[in-house]
Image (cartoon, rainbow, N blue to C red):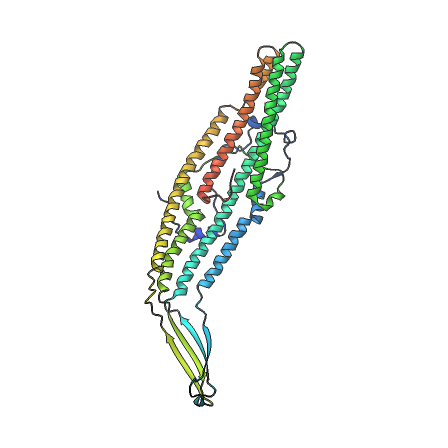
Length: 443
């Protein structure tokens, strides 16, 4: 199935005002899984308590982002170009003075002439230029819509990445708190002679490794905040803290057929490519009409050499397309039209391929997350309690105790990763459907 060009004017209007119907999706989890993160304590983890909504972040982006200002300015310039393209050539006002060089006794003063020359656009070149400019203006409007949509999705992607990085910090901080409790248990048994010194050394190494992992998680959180600031732009300074988003509300992707149909109707970059292809085709008529644009008509008056003499002049100038017959400009316009049509066809095909690929990725990642949660891989609290009880009773070694804590931590970090990747994959599918590309270098 090829993604055909847009045919409905209502789609153009919707994109021009930034309206984009959301991609249908159903959440498979509407609440943060307590078995993944437990009862979060951001203060204990060193995380900020302030929260801001995704809508607040997107509003801040739309209010201040320089790329949106640039796209709006480009649209204004295109609108002005449309006005200019439809204008006729300015008339030319000229004045002349003539005096005899020989036998001046018959012409002692000379004569003065004034005339006005206007090009009559018989080839209707301004109308052809205006058609090209109007199509380019519509393409600029689609570009503005694309930039707005892409930036909104970039902000959402950055919010998810920031929330995931914060969740990882929470997991590692919780793991350290549990390991410190285990360290106290092991130390008490070593001091009481119930366990060898090796146990204290081993639990100490595990604690040091977890502290290093927490430091790395905090560094990743700092990086994620930097990418978030880049996505939002100057307005990010007004958004302290962390985004209030449910990282684990993974969505089930819509049907691929519905995704393809929506892309046909709403993707502004495809609409822009179609409009530029039409503009390139219209430019062929401009090139042809430039060969013989029209005729020059001149009207004037002159003051003669004798007292009171006043005369009028009328002239017609006809350009002769003898040397330049459009043999270069028309051929170039035809080639550019062909190139624009091929570019549009390529973008259409790439859009379909991208949507199918991202749809398969989103479905696979959603299924992987759902299977991981349903398998109970994150419910390791009982395992830790059993390991602690077994170690106190002398039935389990310190290796099994450490393994229980690390397994719980790894299971939780894996759940965060799977949820984050599933959310980002669904977001990439929505981007492929409604925006196509990103204007932000996502992490």
